[in-house]
Image 1 (spheres, rainbow, N blue to C red):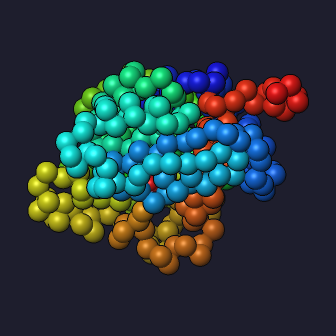
Image 2 (cartoon, protein in one colour):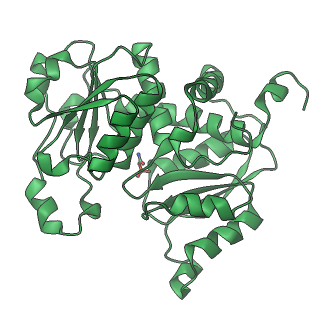
Length: 314
Ligand code: CP
């Protein structure tokens, strides 16, 4: 199901694949994320052409906990990209140096191209404004841990859905679990592009639009919040005008359903007040913790035959 596969596009995987991965993540979680030698001798290359804290470091943490080692870079600065080397040639090099390549890049559509030229499995760690599949795996896993189910809940996705790849892949992930309706809470300027709306409609997911969180907060079980992706605006003054146009505070939560859980892929800026952190609604730091067992599961399922390891056959 996962062995030797590229993880470029979530929609190439099935609910069964997700469930197998979550089962493996549970094994690591129940072991308290204890170090193993499962990937001893394996090398992960991390090629981050765009900034990251969580994704890069949690992949590194996961690989170390699995007994493997890590090489790579956290920005193109200091690499031969500065001398004019292409992204493609950079990946060709890493293909020789490692067993799995984890890539983040600002260009939509680049990952498929890179995965086709690399012989080693390639994992998409964030691609432009369209895809962030491992974040979606973490997010769905968090929903399962918090609510015990995925289908049958009321979802809100709040913020810059137009530019936030994590929001789009979260909704794609929900669609794989049979969710039929997602409520977007966003200024109209930050609605996703028509192609994404059509893609979701074709998967049987209706996207409703709200401008005010107050109009639906009391009916939500899960609220997924994303920041304004300022760096993706061609006209920064437009982003400036949208600053502060949506936010979650204690006041917003006065009418919330007690079982509401708030997720956020982070980083947050002004859209999610720190005063929410100490409430039972806040699930975003648990989401960070779950990133480790989920990414351990991704790496171990792609790089080994976990079933055989469990049975002591290798
Ligand atoms: N959630 C996420 O992708 O965070 P980073 O940009 O810090 O990796």
